[in-house]
Amino acid sequence: MDSRSMWHGARAFRSTSSVGSSHVRGGTSTRRNGGADSTGPLRMRIIRRLIVGSILTLIAVISGELVFQMLLAPNLAITTVRVTGDDIIGREELSDIVGLDSRLLYFHVDTDLIAARLETVPEVRHVEVTRHFPDTLQISVEGRTALAATSINVDGESVPAVIDEEGVVFRAGLRASEGDMPVISGIQLEDFVPGDVLPAELSALFGDLRRLRLDEPSLYAMISELRIVRRGGRYETVLYPVHVQVPIRMPVRAEPERYRAALQGIEVLRSRGQLEAVEEMDLRGGDVVYTMPAEG
Image (cartoon, rainbow, N blue to C red; front, side):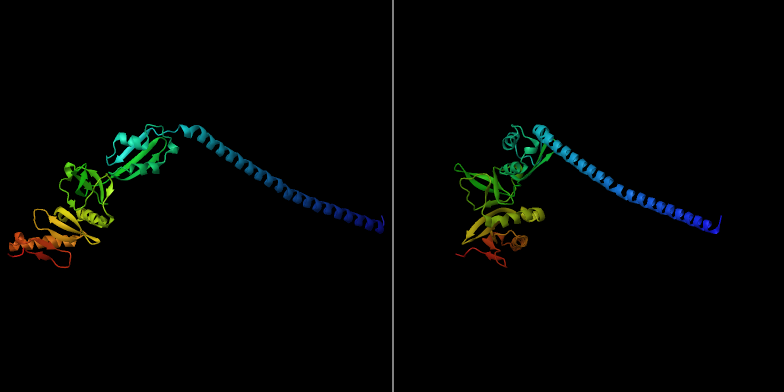
């Protein structure tokens, strides 16, 4: 073989190797492109599954709600009524107000309306009504607390009644435990209806009396009677202490400082032997003023 033939053979060999190398690179590139394209369909399948799953879940929820509202809710009735707190409302009255004789559906009970109706009972101060699944109605009752007694006119007769801290005359008649309460006089209540409220100008007085009873029980206990006096456009009070015949003129507010001053004034008169000689004490101003009987 001559040198020219060998040269041509060598060139042919190199040319064949180049073609094969190019084919291999081309094949590798094709596989890479094919792998990238396969992620698109996979992503679409995942999205479709999520959408289908969400739709099925929504259908299940809606179906469950429809079944509950149409089949279960109409059959969930109140079968137990628990009343806690103050024992004020009788069973018959409670039944009439709440409607216990009729069928109460758990999800249709208006708790706010029931509470508002029960609070129309004069002796009731506040009511809270709650539901407890699946069949219980809880009623918590807070009654009014008697703070003072007064006199009302019922069928032409004077009858004792009780007042609470809000100035509400909520019951005619006194219970055995209410015999030592202060008496509020000077207020005329004609055609009395339980739940009547005394004038708003006196609301501060009853708030003061409540604080005296809680924080200054000895001062509260000294009050035998408080007579309400209207002078011009304002109210005043006349205090009649327990076991003392001296009336004491006071502002309408039952302030502890003035009541202590009244006690001190009484003790001063007693120590001087002048208690029986004084007609009246006046604490409406800054000083204690004694009124003595006119001579002759």
